[in-house]
Length: 266
Image (cartoon, rainbow, N blue to C red; front, side):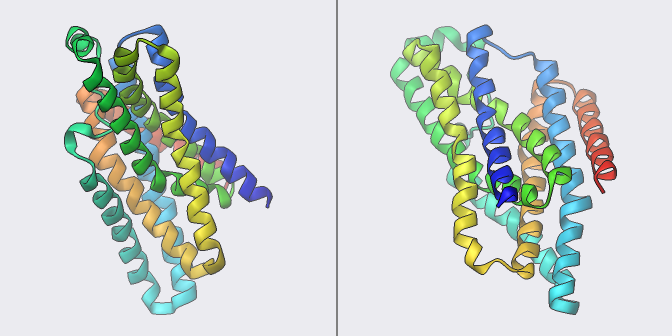
């Protein structure tokens, strides 16, 4: 029960980091591009390393122990099944409303102010899109937290960094639409609540069926989800807001921090 409470807390922390993006509307119109580039690269590095080195390895080990020779193929299917899941979710969200694209920045301020109704709609739809995206991310944080702090803390940190631009994507158009920084911040926080909500719903639905085999499948699927997010969203966004080598610096730093964390808590 203590592990469940800790998992809920970490998932809530990761989800509410969208509020940090909302806070940006209080202090500046545009986040520092270089810092954002390195941070997104760092998040991708953490997710890639933990997915391929830890989560997939655990999936293979658990499923081999419970299913025998068919465990390794089951882990591979779970991994690509996770990728397919998040790809389908992405497919349901139109590209121009993708919550990971921070297009509403200070260069467009006059155009944004001219059509507050359109900006309001964009902000609300983006918040809804983020809520859909955050369900599998919430499960990733939640399931990793059930296994212990050594694995959960770096994943929580990575997903929290990943959620900051999402908060900006919600808050900025809503700020231009309403003129209220409080409303913009409030909506950015609400969009992040779908992460712990998705984790709890998933846990309650799966709890009656929880077994070693299901846990192994979840590990493999979550590894696939995080690899997809890293390659499809984080790395392209990092290079959009900075330089290639800055993004790579973030990736390597994220991998190194994740590796040290796993060594310390092994």
